[in-house]
Length: 281
Ligand code: 13P
Ligand code: ZN
Image (spheres, rainbow, N blue to C red):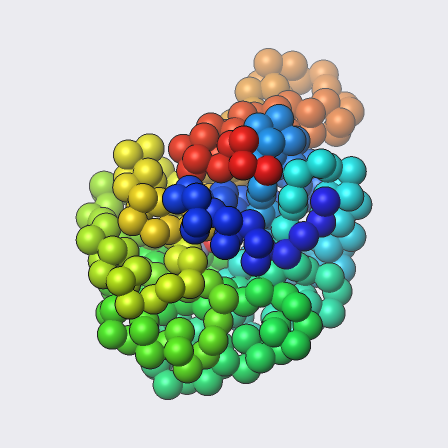
């Protein structure tokens, strides 16, 4: 089923687990993620960054995901990840994305509030939930790199949610996008502090490379959506390289796709179990 993120994240919040949100780059990754969700009877979010959207297009990702989701028995949502402008978020809604993020975290607080509110207003009118970000997730995200990793201020978070009326909030607790070169210093207590003053579902970014215990601790403290991108790319490429190294005669792209899908599906299933969303569909 093709659904929005609203009900699945509300249910996750009530049930004390998180829905896995997995970044896809192509049809194979979309199919692998949905296959994992079917296997484990889990609700699932598929998401695309602006860089990924540039590679194919919003329309193409929406069409592939809808076609695949409609064959599935579990709820599947397509989310715009790190939407970089009002126009991009609106376009995603127009072409059928069932959830969007507007990322104004690089702006100052007032400008982030204004932009996030504008998108939340459109989302509400169209029945599409909106995620916004306050604080900073470090590391490489899509095409931009940030050295900062600022923890979100709970007082600002409360004001941000009240004024913007967004549906979900991504907060900074010390994670970073991409591959961790050193072990991240997580301030998980900060999740608890934000949770005390903010009632909407919270979102964890930069989850690739975190230990199972770290993810579980974040979920226990209130993270209801957990984003994984880098790990899936790594698995996709590892399986592709292994296959091509083992057999240089391959000329059928389907063979590569099959091997890559199998590896991505296994990684998604493993992370779904860590998030506790298996069996929740
Ligand atoms: P990773 O690439 O670190 O898994 O981060 C994923 C993410 O936050 C996507 O928005
Ligand atoms: Zn992210």
